[in-house]
Length: 197
Image (cartoon, rainbow, N blue to C red; front, side):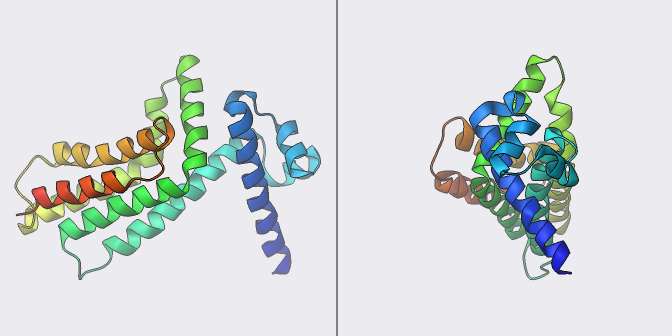
């Protein structure tokens, strides 16, 4: 058991140091060697934890998404909340996780720009990583309309409108380098209130 805990701690330390390398050098210029140097370990040791730099990057994103999903699942399973409250709280939880993961967002943006420059379609990658959030938002909107808690509207259009807050948060944090998302949080609450009956 203690070995697994130490392994997890080291993996987390590697992720933190790798993030620093990705931020300093950009995704494209970061190398496995630079990451191992930053961690103070050999590449051989680093290979015990990750296959390559993309594996490290994907693991970081997976951790962020798991944290988001954990928060969302807790909110969605709370039967005391209305659909509108669930939607607000889900979006606010996502914004909070994005704010806490600002450094990773810089790297994600750099990676997506790298993909775009190389001719790949970054939209497909983003969609695959966010499919659960999309489903949850659509489900909550649909549930709210059916129960009469939300105004009758096209579910897809309403979902796209709400998901736009997530995209706006990423833009504000990475491109505009906003310190916080307080104004956007207020906008989320206002928007959801406007959807409620």
